[in-house]
Length: 353
Image 1 (cartoon, helix red, strand yellow):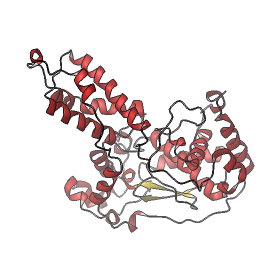
Image 2 (image 1 turned 60 degrees about the horizontal axis):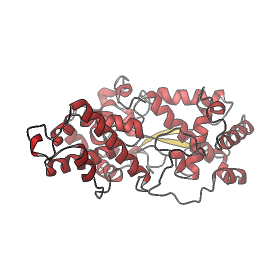
Image 3 (image 1 turned 180 degrees about the horizontal axis):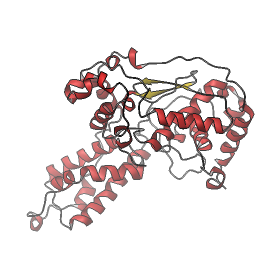
Image 4 (image 1 turned 90 degrees about the horizontal axis):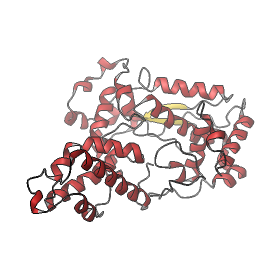
């Protein structure tokens, strides 16, 4: 999955000249209240993925169609058969700001956006048909009343859950399990029967398949067009929004890296003329961050916090690079991946709610 803003930046926005802030510097733009952005979904990058989602629902014979609105993040409110789309996907300038503030743009490519839309459509269709109330659904996935965790410890090798979004998201809550299973079922050419053959999760996929066939041609019983936390109602500034978001995806500053860093780098006098490890890590910081993100599915912002701590410790310990640069790159990439996976498994992973 190519996690860049390239798809958004290639998409022209109708009415783009009517947004004076599009030419503002980041510092000025960050002080703008979100309600003053005055943007919409029409003509934006998200139109094409939404049209594709509609086509996929139609091909499955479903009459359900979610409604969409702009908000501060991706979500589907309880009881609402619609999907909130993050504001930064509606304008290239805001996508650039998101990239600067969070180091990546969630849903910023067509493929990535569609994955999230299919997931959110799973939540929305549950609301539209009150599926969570069915005993068969509760028996298969668990009860929605189960409390959402602030943190969860994923089990990467479990075969009781589908793998759709990153971070083994289906494992975080029964509602996410259903939404992820629906997304895999909905994805064209997913070949789920073949891919998951012999896995316990295939029972969930067959349940969703049978349920959707039962609901085909049935109009939804919940049809509200409510828009929760719609962009025009959000009074906080973009600066306040990103301060909160960075806190949410930050990491605890209690992880210990020194033993591994000392094994990889050197403090020996005969290596004193070698490049400092801090300089070396800063040089390929973006490269290694993106690579570890693609391997683990963790947010680049979270990985960058770990990197920042490691660079700081390398500087304090006066560590040097005692080997060829390419070998050091490979070894450190593996080291950072291990620490990221340990973080994910530690129970400290922060779920995006």
